[in-house]
Image 1: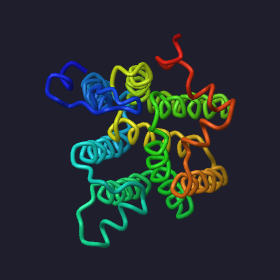
Image 2: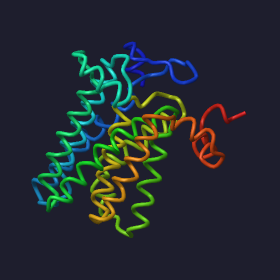
Image 3: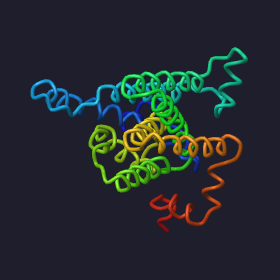
Image 4: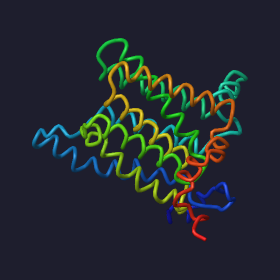
Length: 254
């Protein structure tokens, strides 16, 4: 955070307070450092603790998010980025959409058996990555959604395997999310996209093919709502969601 602030990487948040951004850079930085002992374990003792395909997928998504944080233009949402690309303008959002699709297709082609799971897994990862970016309009919202999703999947399936497999990312996401919630920094697209990609992977690693089909339908509905309406207004206008969403933020400490 000190590095970001000292080098002028700050952005006004929803309260117009300039804070370090993208704090999400912490997530791939911590994960890359953790790869040193994990890769040694895999190479020396064949411990099979490293999902190399998942590592490349999430790192690629982080790079695309970082590019969007650094060079984003005025276009927003899939409709805005699509219109910018059609008009001949370069859009980092369009680059992120196409790049995420390519990464998701590659990961699914290598890891998922059968055409149905291949297509559904790709859709889940792409939609989840975009949706968590839509969530990231208030401090801590994306990571709260990530924690709730991971908790529900782990308890519902009674399987901690996906959590252990994604632990390389889960720990840094939670730490960065706590700092984001306290407005010590802003995740940016770098952080929210990584949270979404890891959340998508968690869904794929946990759910059956039927479960993935249901997940795609739910993600499409929420994404469509976010494109044409306002997820932020929905959250702030629903009492239970509003309380959960605002819990832990600085302005609530009166």
